[in-house]
Image (cartoon, rainbow over all chains, first blue to last red; front, top):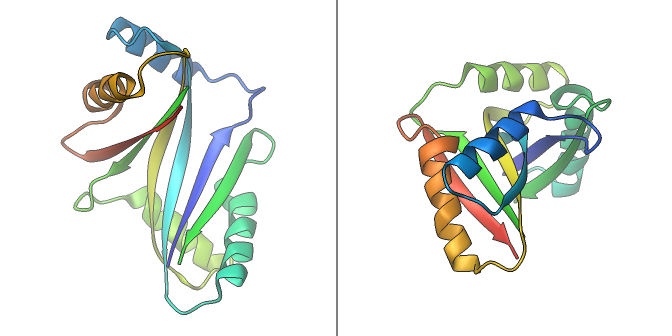
Length: 81
Length: 81
């Protein structure tokens, strides 16, 4: 089973790395870029056979407690059975 | 239009940050974690009205030339029209 946790900065938080990427992409000729935001993705390989709903709850707890900083970041969890 | 570029380390490349996360998750009680890999995700906000296929080609070029290091990293592009 695989779980993917995507962590992104909250919309209200400034993202200078994203700003730099947007500027670099426009310099590269990708004129239609309006803005860019950078986040991180954590791909978890999980042992098979566990109940998907219980796994989802555990991974959500982990995302909230360890993987994201809930003050500045949002997260979402996807489970692939 | 939105484009999401996900950049992840190639399978053959060591990921100490992922190893640390897997160990921390197991310490947190998430015993079914076998391994974790960390990547980054770049969300691009693009101006509307452009042709999806031409946008995809441009974003793929950007991913390959700027956003990922093709020696160590894989990337994939998703376009939401």
